[in-house]
Amino acid sequence: MPATGIRENSLVIKIAADSSYPPYEYLNEQGEASGYSVELTKAIAQVMGLKIEIIMTDWQNALNGLHSGEFDALQSIAYSDDRAKIIAFSSPHSITNQSIFARTDDSKIHSIEALRNKSVIVQDASIMHEFLIEKDLGARIIPTKTHTEALRQLSAGNYDFALVANLPSLYLSKELNLNNIRPVFNPVSGQRLSYGALAGNEELIARFSEGLAILKNTGIQQKIYDKWLGTLEKQDSLIKTIGPFAVYFLGVLSLIFMAVVVWNSMLRKEVDKRSQQLKDQQQQLIQADKMASLGVLVSGVAHEINNPTGLLIVNLPLLKSAWEDALPYLERHPEYENITLAGLPFSRIKEELPYIMHEMNHSTIKIRDIVNDLKDFARVEAEDNKHLVPLNDLISTSVRLVDASIRNATAHFDLNLDPKNLSIYANPQRIEQVIINLIINACDSLEDTDKRIQLSTYFDVDKEEATITLEDQGKGIKAEHLPRLSEPFFTTKREAGGTGLGLSVSSGIISSYHGSMSFDSVVGLGTKVIVKLPIINSLSASDV
Image (cartoon, rainbow, N blue to C red):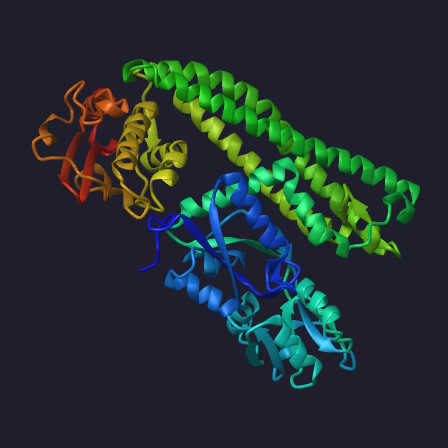
């Protein structure tokens, strides 16, 4: 069976790599593993204290070995939505392009449909092999073990085209003196290369992502990139390749871009710093005082975070628009391929900058939403501040607030909300407090990330009742403890800092709204919590 997490029976992590994928990974003349990805993996292992073994093989054997459990991870696997269903990916360490190669005596093609009824060589089990199968273009697919074999077959005139990775193929063509083939068309946009492991090995992938982040922040990754890939690009000066106006414009654009990157980094550090402060103070307070203290702290953090976040939200679209306006001028320049921006080749900036700006904008909006949710949850409100509120909306907000706890506890969280989304008459903060307590308890009960948590709602219009059900596959609760769960100060987690007030307070809140909370649990199998609340049809304002 495939391994889960980092190997327990061995201290060595086995990482498979393609033996013919230069300059990313390949066997050098001495028969040793070499290349950008190989050196990057060794650097990550060093900073993270990992013991690794890099096994060089053909790609199909590497992928099969990952699925069978022979290998723990792959160091250069292209991301796709289908692969992500069974493979966990790290943050990307590089971007690669795919090209259709043809012999120089063939006419240039302008669309992927031109492959219909043609013979196309691809590397077996590669991302382009999957792409051709998915597109079903009517091409005759010829799988080969390596890029080297694919290029030699094309050069020899045996087939019509080869659909292969652009940079490795150019590298191999030069090394093998295959002068009669060339790239003629790029059928897909740049693809991210990452570390990959089977789902369930998220802990291992997280360590690679952390190591990669350290290398990026210390500049080590850039040095490795320049050593293996930077020398393939011409390093002409920006001022020598474009006119004075473009130099000025791009200089301003670069300053804005760098300022946003620096500001985003400072913002991330500030969030981490404040989050740690909140955690330290939460550990010193009992549950009864925690919500009031948390409200004061979050208000201060939210004020400091909202200002820079607002600047990012306003300026990122301006930055994107400026880049899109500048791009046509750059591409029309006779030597645009030689342009460098911020020390990087224009071709790389052109591929990566839109993705970087999209990710930054997405992350900034996420920060804003989280801060707003925290402010709403922490705001001090009177108990009688009740109004109509859709129950599903309260649950969605609660889930967002504890998203980090959920992701750390399980890879299988299911949220099933009744589409009717009827309203209850309540103080929103009180109901959110109950949902958050129940979710955190469920997360704490799970012993590994393969276990599932399911949260659902159901509205029974006939009974005028809303039902919230939370099921987990955790350790379960002993039968003798079930009747005492709502008692103040009763807890089975005293050594872990539990106070026994969470369920007691939650039960009191539900009872005050004429509802009920019940528990059903089996040791070793999990726990089900059922909360019932009246919908507004059943009560008048005076009743509540």
